[in-house]
Structures are given as structure tokens and as C-alpha cells.
Amino acid sequence: MDYRFANAADIPALAAFAGDYYAGDPDMTREAREKLCWTRLGDDRRIVIFEDEDRLVATIVYKPSSGGFDLEEFIVNGGGLIAAEAFRLLLD
Image: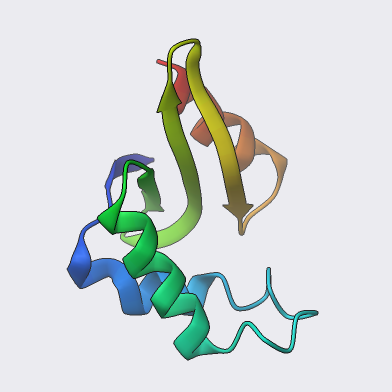
């Protein structure tokens, strides 16, 4: 599994990936999810993308803090092993 920080070019993929996560919220249209990503990239939050064989499998949004970081969102598509590996990589 590879990981990297998201950039502006990743916003359409991030918005699409988060679609199932926000499926129960009628206000979180694709446009609203893209706007949220832009907001997050423009402030002091970090978005980390995890990919396996060039396929997006997880995203983490966190805000650095004096105690380490505050986890704001963790979206995983692929089960517990991917989630555990993504979180381990973040902590490293």
C-alpha cells in the first residue's frame, strides 16, 4: 500500500470516493463534497490518500495539534486489514 498527501488534482477522486460515506446525507452532493475537499486543502488540515495497486482504498483527514493530531475523518473501502494498515502508516 502506498500513501501520499492529497493535492488539488485529487479532489474529484476524493469526492467520488466519499460518496458512499455521505450517502445518508442529502446535502452532501458531489458538488458539496468537492467544496469540502477544497476547504480542507486550504486550511491547516491534511488529507492522506492510501492506494493499493493504483486504486484508492482509504482516506484520512486530520489536523495537526500540539498532542500529535486530531483525526476528523477516516474512510476505508476494503475492510479491516486495509484500515489497520492505513492507520499504522499514519502513526509512523
